[in-house]
Each structure stands twice: as structure tokens, then as C-alpha cells.
Length: 177
Image 1 (cartoon, rainbow, N blue to C red):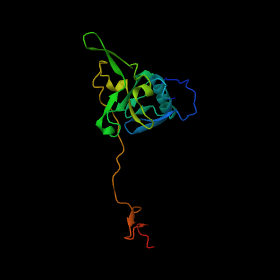
Image 2 (image 1 turned 30 degrees about the horizontal axis):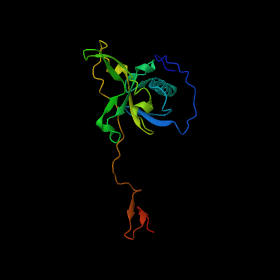
Image 3 (image 1 turned 180 degrees about the vertical axis):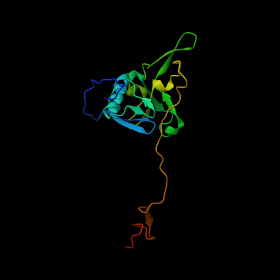
């Protein structure tokens, strides 16, 4: 375990079943693949995510130290499942006090589990740490910003690109047959 990270996991390794979801958790250029039961609480999911990152020996992701408490991990789902560049929505729903102001943040009953939040198999979720959204005075700055870099695939010509030989068949570039 790295210096400064005191989170100890007691999460046993579990064998994935057909009911488990395969989820990709992204922060900056880091992607963590986890098998998660759709009925696990997000608290348990965050603990598994933190445990997986810590087990790799990575103490810092894009300048932010891993938190010691899984509750300091914030998860987000894409606004548009087909286009993550549209942005992310925080899974924590703010609890409002009587006059409409934000009182505290906690997971709502409907989104306490992946099943309740509508998370699907193969979905990408963003994650960040509370440290990122806290200013010097501990106040929230902007919790709508997510540091997620999605890979871009350019359509570059490659020597392995197949070209048509005019007869409806494909031939490798440089292949004279």
C-alpha cells in the first residue's frame, strides 16, 4: 500500500456470474474494469473500485492522491450513453432543506444500487475524489466538472488497410496475388 493511503479492504474476491455487470470506471486516462452485482450498494462499488486501484500500487491519479475512505469517491453516469463527451451526471442526489437550499449530499433510494440507477452492462462511469471539488476553505467549487479523457480513433491510412482489387474481393496493401 502506498504512503498516505490507509484504506484497507476486507472485500473478498468474488467469481463473476452471468448476473454481474461489467463496468468501466474512468478518471482522466485511467480505466478500471470491475464486475459488479446490480444489487450491490454504490458504497460497496466504490470500496471495490478503490481497492482495485490501490492493489495496482498507484497512489495518485492525475495529480490527486487516492482517498482513504470510499465515501470520498464520487461516481457519475454519462448524460448521453452513446456520447460521453456530452458530460456526466453525479450519482449523488442533493438533499434539499425546507427552503430549497442544498442541505447535504447523499445517495437517494432509487440510485443506491446500479440496478436502481439504471446502470447497464458495459457502461462507462466517471469517478473523481472529493478532494478535487473542495477549495482551500473546504467549500465545493464546481462538482459538475469531470476529468475523463475518452480515446479518439482517427481514420488514418495504414499499410494494413484492405483495398478492393476491383473484383469485389479484398487484398492486403502490397499483396500482388
